[in-house]
Picture 1 (cartoon, one colour):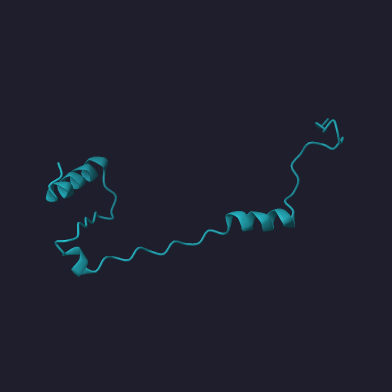
Picture 2: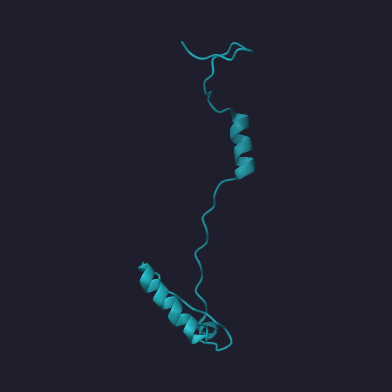
Length: 80
């Protein structure tokens, strides 16, 4: 015996998605687009003394390695 709605008498169960549901879902949330890859900074910007740019390695690092690299980078700019 399935559970039914006492008002309508219809069984309580999920129905298949309609075309209107699919159209509205796409209109609200849209389709995810791939993010464009980050472009590296030009060398003249990276080497400029007026710009505080810190580039971290892309390989995975442990939290202690990351913390050490952040401390080192901050110390270059006089932040302790």
